[in-house]
Image (cartoon, rainbow, N blue to C red; front, side, top):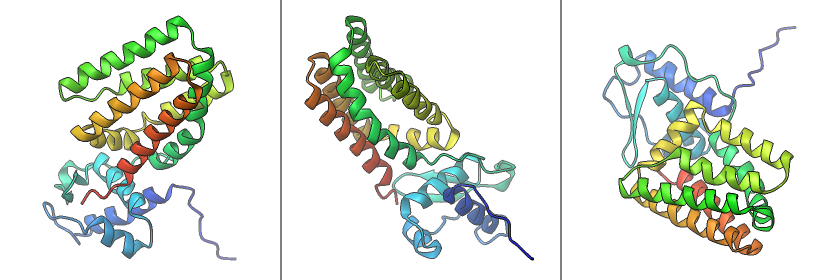
Length: 230
């Protein structure tokens, strides 16, 4: 029997492989813009967000430069990496699981959080606000708030699952994805507003408001990740 090997690599990495091969074959020269996300998605019969993940993987490897609001441009291949990131987590899949778990973690935190936990939440907001005023984005302050909520949930299994998801955020494609989001002032502003609402609800012990605020926050981030960038 002649069998073909089955790839267990994520779809966005497989797409990045194809685009990389076309770049290396000279189908697009250095400095030229790749086809739009819409055109690439149509050609490959995949979603635009999946194409975006592929383009960011190519950016991390040095094959393209992603300019949010403009498109992706091929870089001088002397600056390209030897290989694409070998990661099995999709940033968008991570967000979907967070959307399932974190609103309920917020509910539990509103019921169980300690005075120390409340102080830590307020500190995370202060730090985010200070960074925002400087036009910066702090991944550490972001994680500080979310993991303080996970700690305050009182459920060790839930806490471990959320810690795993946040550790996945440190993978290079996910990190670059959020760097692009954090570079947009309107995104930073809305995330700060969202975080403030989540913290206020938890500190005041309002479980319903905590659930809704966290859900709204994660829905906003997901929408920002899926919004057209070119």
